[in-house]
Image (cartoon, rainbow, N blue to C red; front, side, top):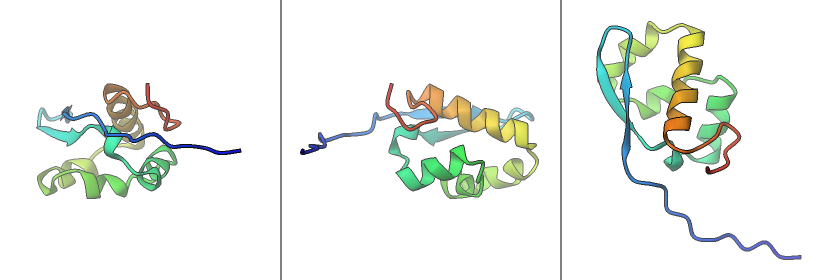
Length: 89
């Protein structure tokens, strides 16, 4: 049995994120996430967000509650066309 992986290029573009205080920033399309990053996010290891967000957003991340962080990750993955199980839509 053989598995052949096709070439894959993540979709271009960015997803705009609006924090509760109205601050806006953007993240690259979530399709650029590695398996390790995606696994960390869906397991609620939000430390990876500090690697992905610009530094000017870090203090705002610190003020979010767990539910808001979960909503952020879920929305970002959905807007990027990536479901939480890592399957491309």
